[in-house]
Image 1 (cartoon, rainbow over the protein chains, first blue to last red):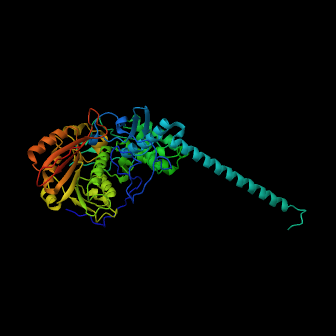
Image 2 (cartoon, each protein chain N blue to C red):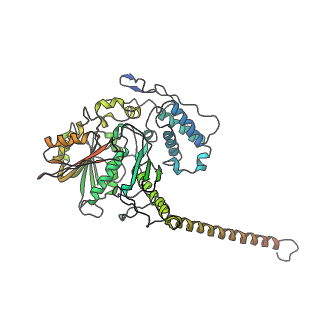
Image 3 (cartoon, each protein chain N blue to C red):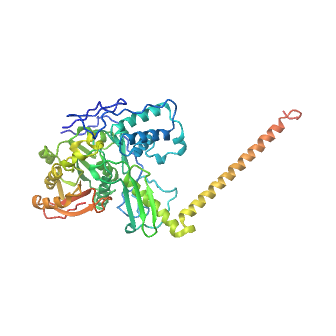
Length: 169
Length: 349
């Protein structure tokens, strides 16, 4: 019998990437998040509140690991999740991470975004945010170009002033 | 006990796999010589392609995934998808090329990818992986999800609750279940019983000393000691060996050659360790305590009947299937509840 003693030396790192302990199938972004836990939004940069809630009965999920036994009897690393929304025929594939659990959750997030676009079209929050983000980028570029132009003019002025034949030193 | 010859495979580019009775038969590549490192520089994608083809030629399973995961790891990422296209089209440094060759050669010997890169993800954790400690399976992620739902709803285990709850895990592997629950439920303490001292390395330096005890015991042979150490436990969880002995011989080489057989072989009917756990459970669990088990798809009705006859204080509650459950269930988790005073329901997942 051995108790773990603190002097056993080894290096270990605990990644604190994700977040939720939400129940299976619950709408993810609408669950209250426990305080104190780090929250990382996987899909998109803004917290989209109005996305459609998924009804698990309308979803068909396939976990692509090939045929044959599961559980302890197999050790496959492919963990692509394929999620289909039956009423609309929308299909989402996700293999972004090495965890099936996280891929399933992300697939659902992506599905919510896609369904938002599907049902709301141009009014979809996803598209609206995208447009806004594009406009912001354009504005930034415009300003940056403006700054470059001003700097160029300034340099030219300096060069002109330091030419021989001028009175200034 | 079966031992893996540790000098095989890891160090050179050639290797031989030797078992206790000499070389294995046709299922295993006896010598696995790697392709030569190219003279000129190659890009990440070219290296991935080269090795994918080589794995395919040698009959290594998941040739593309293996190649991609190893390359991603070398480039500092978890998956190839998270890397930018430019990075993949850049030339690899000589050091990185050599590392790719070294790691892929290990994969050539059928070493699981998780052991090759010495890490793998389980839910939101990145865990150390070392042979022959059992590699966590994705089905077990669902078991943890289920437990989190149940434990979060139970008074006293949620965040901010006053009292502490003790969970016992029998057989911890690389710490997948216990570390997930310890991370998400700050009020939970864990007691772990494992027959493998190596497993303790997975719990070092995590600052968990006050919430975690590890006992190196064999639940089959040291039952008395286990009972003396583990009392008033509210939750017992295990992913015990549950394969049928006859199925051990048909395991893929990745598992058969590299993973701990003791973590897989559950005896003739796969129930050896499960029965032992359920026999001890009533004395370990406090009132209304629960047992969560991952089992073979064939087990739930067998377990239900066996418990009815042999373990008075326990009752079946429910069976739940994991995500792959279609008509043929791939794996199931089982959980049961116990009470000292009166009959309770128990659940099979």
